[in-house]
Image 1 (cartoon, rainbow, N blue to C red):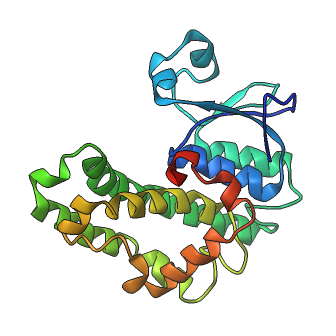
Image 2 (image 1 turned 135 degrees about the vertical axis):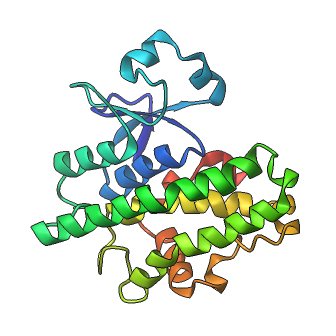
Length: 228
């Protein structure tokens, strides 16, 4: 529920295509929280203006300016939103649910995300993948291994932490969608990485992706420049 230039309490600074900003947008839209959209482009982010550095000294997005101060780091922002707007919980309602969701978030962040980003997304985005296609194929096999725990979890429940969509799903989705997007590029297809259609080898994960693509707020949060 973004509003360009609107005088609402929360301002979100973001860049289209950033999976970390996309996480926060998904959380905001799914929860139905109104916010002022402050979209930045890559050039603005690279400038690291003093005004932006006062919000986040690291000079990165996303940043949520709440009126009582600025928050950065995507998972921290989602945790804040869940406490500030509890009507649609993303971190569960019981201690057991809360712990399980954080476990899944931590599993993705610690054992899956970096492999996707460092070994697949960055080489393809930066044009380095073609330098060593065999290394890319090895990395693609490692990605399937790293996604194995998700396939197992989703084989027994519709979402990563159980029967309900939670922060665990919102944290994981953008990075996986980013990988799928770059894995569908002609150079990636020529290397036969096999990452453009995850559902062919991981059917439970493929079904989860379809469910997530129909979640409330998905279309509103979808990176605008990906539509062109």
